[in-house]
Length: 437
Image: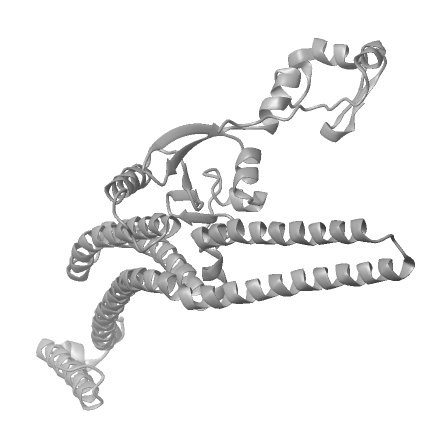
């Protein structure tokens, strides 16, 4: 399968008329206006065209970009192809917006979409298009992509001669879900091994380095939780919608489409044969032509009724057979839900550690407040003693200064009074249970 390229400029005129047109040329579709000299002038400019290096060739390369795809068929054989978007869209009957989900240049959440002829899978690094007979995997050097390719080829080749209950598209989808769940679970385990020691160390020693490490790990945890939550929600959405699951039975729909056209063709052949026999046996009259139109209406009504009956039967069968895909999705839903529960428990452990640190910091702050209160009370008592000594330090005449022992007695009495006030303050604080002593 090779990528097809459509020409940039379509010419509906003969070659002679287009070669004689050497006037001004306007290409409004691509924004190039009034180029003197027509196509020749445009080609002469070459790299001088603003925005498109390389002239017309640059425009062609910019419009149609090939990507590397890995094609895996039902026998397990794989090969690398260079395909453009148009080829993929025609082959798989997909709109352009579905291919944007697989573009590695854009970041989209995990998505599983069931279409008419394909299943679009974008799970972490595994981005592929699954049809009833082949898988188109976005080629990459990522470990998950390489593992998906090798494991799918290995399983398909091992089950080549054995009958499997699951169709091809479900085996490819199952492997994508399996590798995605295992990859996310492995990342969760690595995060657990890294974050638990850091949290224990932070609980014993609160410093800037440990806080920065916990902040970085918490950001990683939130990002991983969002990815796991999106995969879980996508699987849960598919399990809740039987119509989306019925759209993913690609092999069954292909077999049904191969059977119904043959029956409709045989019916149309028989009806045309009957019309020919009637026309040969009798001449055409207005009455008979009216009866022929009535027969034609009856034929069309029978075709519509048969198609409705077939669609009703197929829908009822798909509703009955949807349990097979639902059981497959339920198994991986349990796995991804367990992974999400581990992330949530890890987040709760981080929140508990933060609460413990806040309590510990609050306790330290309370001790500082108590120490500040004691220091303020001691400062107040010392200020009272200093005020008494300052009063007696002034120059005034008094009989107290005639006897030195009298001044010492005043100082001793002031010291005892200040000490008594300080201990009285401590007893009051203990009585009010402001802080234990």
